[in-house]
Image 1 (cartoon, rainbow, N blue to C red):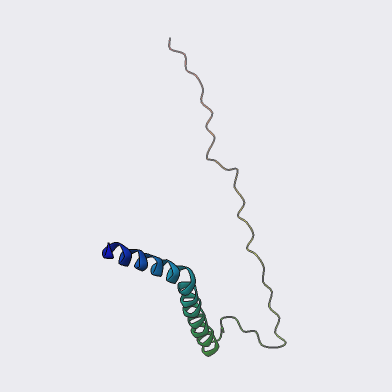
Image 2 (image 1 turned 45 degrees about the vertical axis):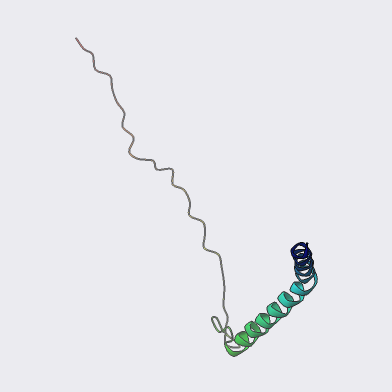
Length: 83
C-alpha cells in the first residue's frame, strides 16, 4: 500500500513539474540562448555587401533561358520500291 502511495505522489509531482515548472525553465533557457545569439551578431556585423555612399548599384535578375526550338537535324526519308 505504501509503495502505491509513493508512486502516486511521484506521478502527481512529475505532472505538476511538467505542467508548470518546465515551461518556465525552457523559457529561461531559450531567452539566454537568444541573448547569446544577439551578442554574437553584435560582435560580427553583416558586412557582405557594403556600398559606399554615392556609389550606384544595379541589381537585376538574370534573364530566364529561352528554350530553343532546335530539336535536331531534319531528315526527309524516301520510300524505296522493292522490285
